[in-house]
Length: 514
Image (cartoon, rainbow, N blue to C red; front, side, top):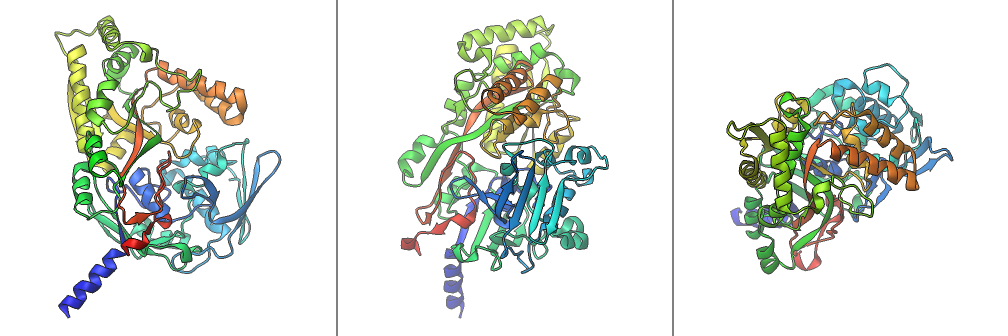
């Protein structure tokens, strides 16, 4: 019996997809989640009106079709008749009305609520004002959304977790505890079976999912893998089918040892260091520019990260003709260092009395390596002392968002969708993601203009906004990410794309490995 049980367990395990997923998810509440690790799981548990397909292209999700009026202000969604939650109940238009109202309620403290700001009345709701919201259930399967102004990217926003439907009854019954296994009832391809904090989350196939017949993998285990080196060891030991990332400096070895399993591609994403502009220590624009110029980005991507990243002298990872870049992009390292010293001394700082700067980051070996390298460069070029402070992901996100004690902090932006505007809007006044505290009415006006225009006028506004952000030295772009994974030869259906979204629904075990 023991042997039979063991063989049965092994057979069952062969059908479980083992995924590395980075840090512990900060939340599985679609309206409250922020981190990439949470979003990856939420795409398995829930489905918004729109969604990404296997190649990252936008397609209808819970909605079967959408009609947009000629003015671009009124959207009418027809929900799928077979849309079901994991408990078998129908997905209705009223669920989306409730979910959008909840997301825009300041009491929810949804970090991505600004993504719904184009909806009529949403901006007022976010300010705590009473205003009619432009979301209405016409009938059980028909949802109307009205906007304040046309937005070419609005449908893309509806694929984000902030716009996913939650069951009102589950939240009213369990409060914040509705995200626990047995209580979390989504409308996605999978349902949460077990969550062991700081270890793994296990999902099983949702039999009521509208497309359940096409879901090939019965269960998925998302492993917490904050240490990329440990994640690699687990992959090489056969414990993982898919890694979340690669450890720094391993690319050459992995190309030789795992050529058939290595997937590296450009990502629409940027790693930066953010300044807390509300902190008086960082009031000096000259100091902020000096700190930026003292960092040798080429050394970072070649010797510290070393996984196909590109040096960044702009926030948006597109170097098209006329696109903004820091003036120093064309300088030699020596020229940058000389200018950094001039700015530092000109701002009144004394190398004999070193400034102490705190650099805060979420716990990971890669972030620590990067922090040590940056600290060494600041010390060598400017004589600055740096205190490195690491925090567990959930704590780090809360600290960064509060903006009270932070000085310089690790930041990064993986685009929610392929639009430059998605990189800029988080830095507008009032945006819940504006952790640097940047406040520039002219910048906000340019972002608003880009959102409401098209063609050359839109491009001009985008370029103008990004240039103002760079000129203000509100952040330090360091490098543009690469999408990098190890994918087991047992796993099929994985497609690299710049957004790096990979729902388990589109993956399958290859026939030869079954």
